[in-house]
Image (cartoon, rainbow over all chains, first blue to last red; front, side):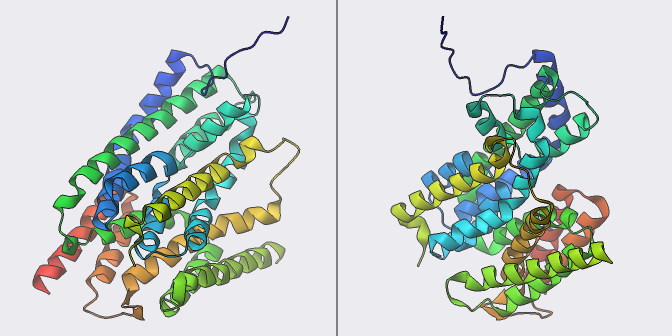
Length: 242
Length: 111
């Protein structure tokens, strides 16, 4: 007899492991909260309407992509350039998903889709560290820990962003909240600049993006990313052959 | 032109950005297991975000009116350098943002 089961959006996980995930993410909530607050204030400060800012926070849920596309949206940049920028910033998540897929592949697709949405920088880092040496993949313990950490991260981000959106109008623009947004992006950038090819890519991209800042439709951004990326990849390939 | 008050533009922007979030975060969770990430792609995927973040931050800090602005008067630049040094040493984003904003505000008032 066929039995139809309702497709749950979350995999089943025991309470104790969920709580362990919550406990490991909780100390990071302060940093997540600051980053969310800055993002919320920056969005409103740049002129985004409240429904827009709430929509971005809820659906896009990617701080670095949100902050990176903010000046582009403010300038009314053509949408393909906006989307391409977000895609470039988010490409690191493709690596995360490839690296952690073995834990999730036995779940139904709806649960995998939601788990992916929740698999941000911090959740991925904690989860990978905790279970890297676990020979078995896809255990209730792993799911519990993953959801506990990821949902704590999601909650801290949502609450702090909405708080920032609410109070954002109180800060005059000359206080420079766009700078706080840039600083938050640099905090994501610095840990990735741990090897020479990445540093070379940063220097080439940085210089080119400043020199091409007057190109129409922010095309200088894409030009400098392609050039800087090509330099970084070439150096990496050359070094691994040498 | 400001895109924020054009609701068609914003709705399409958010819809597309949502697709980008799912397409990247859930990418390999949704692909069949036989599809693996080629090692050569991994390099490109690793460096693209580094360069994209740089290309966003550098012009906002180091240009003014689309022209290079490397000067003693560029308060954002000094704030960014101080904040980066703090983050490189302590790996603490909260401290970094506080120091950066403090340097910026101090320069804005007194320099």
